[in-house]
Image (tube, rainbow, N blue to C red; front, side, top):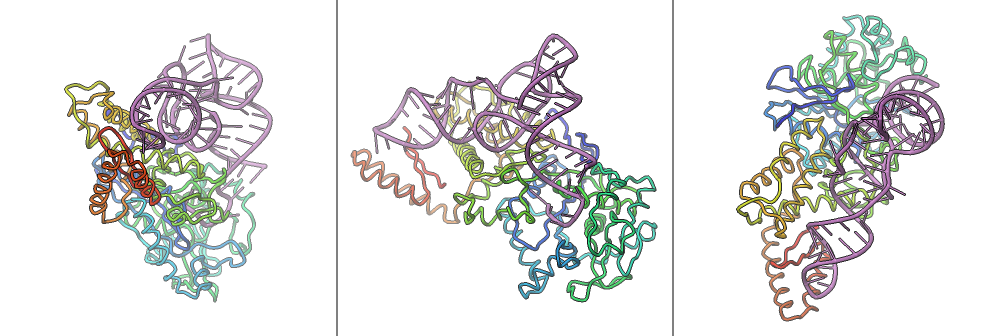
Length: 489
RNA sequence: GGUCUUGUGGCCGAGGGGCUAGGCAGCGGUCUGCAAAACCGUGUACAGCGGUUCGAAUCCGCUCGAGACCUCCA
């Protein structure tokens, strides 16, 4: 490859060459889901974005430790139940143990991720399993004089922190004075010195069921400490990449920087990466807006705004067709287009295995590999990679039709291109129907030979009946000079 | 109101001072019993108005539109 990996760092708002702190090791932390609901399309974006980062860094030979947390405690709700944990609320409504709810949605999240071919992270720590570490982190911030205790709760003193020229707002581009004047007044804020201060520890109200003992009160950790405590525990006080959705930029990641700096004197990582949002009718798909479609609904088609079910690979391909820092607008039409495009790509992969080599190549296939590396090195530009893969697709199809020729070496090069980029790095795999594939293969072989016989006898009623009936159950037949092939849609 | 981002052909989306992005859809053809697929050909696209420049979709300014964050959110 001719270029080096460049990563867009939110902190500097520029692309920077990637240099790991301890070559060849790379530490990466990504904010995972809060497990109080089914994962929706929005959740698939960071998962797939950082799956690509994870896969590509490993492909480049780095030894990556990828930590992605599960938030099963600590997020406050902004409604009548203020102060009550989201997970606890759901549990009370359904008469379940909070941990039962968390476990249930963790399980479905894992299933969804597996379907999307998202590799599991190296470590997936639970917030509830790291209360002690969070208490220790809070204590260190108190010792540094950057937090105060108020009525059993502990708050981060943003003004004091900022006064030490640490610049609260360096990541999100905010100015503390503006924050102090624009932060909305909410109920239960009288414990804070300033509205911009954020909770490190919250004293639990009597009805709050998720609670732990601490030096300050029986309660639960605040919104942002878990990531600071767990990333430091598994990746050290400074690591390479911290990722998450753009909506977490402020206040979550800004506060993480403040907490880390309070503990160690510097921010937690070298590179901050943020994926953009998936929109629906131009608006962010999110829980609070109620305009989200869960991944399960995509897979089974049971949602009013979906015309049909879509496979997990269509979703993955759809997401990879846009750059991770751009918004991506969902619509049936866009997804249908992704579905067809993906099918064409996978069809070419299949065709590639059956190509007959020639003595010379009539087209230029050898430069594609380098171009794909260049695209990935340019801040993981997957849409550009895909455009080159379609160029390869055109060459493959034309060669099959006898309009272009390829040498054995070039065919091998294209096979390597597909194996490396499509399968390994982009993580796109052919849709598989079941474990009975080989049986299906045999049955189809028989059906196609009967149909061929019928065609030769000009018994088109029979041949069409076979084709149409198969089409109804999702198997499409393609006829060519060499015979008929079939695909599962 | 503050901070940040953004406006590309019917749709989704790259790119980003002079070089065809790509996919889907459409149209015309080749092939085919028919269809599908595949292949070939096919598009006055860069919100508007000014400015800088030999040259702007790309840089700058203004106008208009959209979004994100400021409150849990991927």
